[in-house]
Length: 381
Image (cartoon, rainbow, N blue to C red; front, side, top):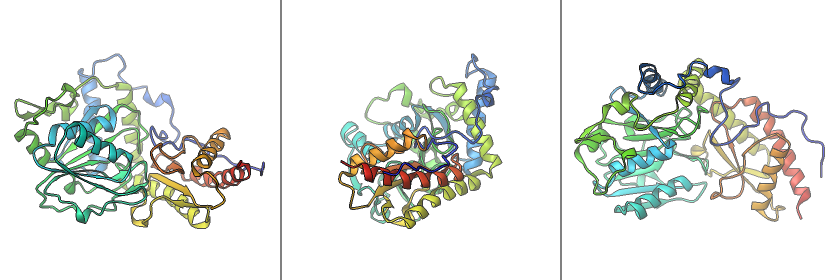
């Protein structure tokens, strides 16, 4: 085994895919303006929540006619809210190529028992959207957080579709260019690309989604936490900062700080450039080393946020055990935290490369990846 590890560690070894690294140079002092101990329904609370909504719209370029709401239970809560509130009016198509998309399949098919066609692809691959019937309601993830595979663009989603598109974009928003005209419901959380705190989600509704909400009532009862309408009309207050349940004003302040930083680094273009730069460092590293590869099989579908890697060296005896050993060694040496593959994904590593991560830290990580690989290879039983 080689004991000569790299001299330079990443300044911030936090490469978790959620909650993700905070913005660079983050300190708790940045939250000094949080209205702690105040009601979110007070003027100051409403203003903060409204600012979070409208700054999100500004940075992401969300059309003015689309509704943006802050909802409970992170991205999961937002996706569940959309499915329980909107599905059932027509047949659905569930599209999945990783664990979270597969989870939405389970909810729709086994829990809601909706008539649905299920289209899946293996980890590292993606479903061909040209084969999806968009006259049905289509549920899919834009970026597979656990597979590192993303939809390359919205070209195969027809403008004249009869069904709704419900898109889980939690590890894509703020790092990838989402085609709003092709998305009727879009969900994400603060804890991914913006490095915000967990438990709060965002739901974005197109006019078509609003029309469905106001014209269709699901056959099943809706928990209060999912209700977006009252008396057959959209509850507009939800999309102006009057949240369904009590939000953390500390978390809201944290999100506002991250949004302000995003504007300073160039808005969406700047955020995407940072993620692209980070991911390319790892892609190039894979190209230079024949023992590691991107899990995504098609370069066009490689994620620039949740970069998933697999070991390809035939000297590895037990891939799952080996990958865990590499991740543990990186953490033991404070070189990288939380980079093991997701529990349902193939054995390997997952490195978050979103906009809050510094390129210099990814560069330093590549040296440690090589060292940890060689060290663990020597230590195999």
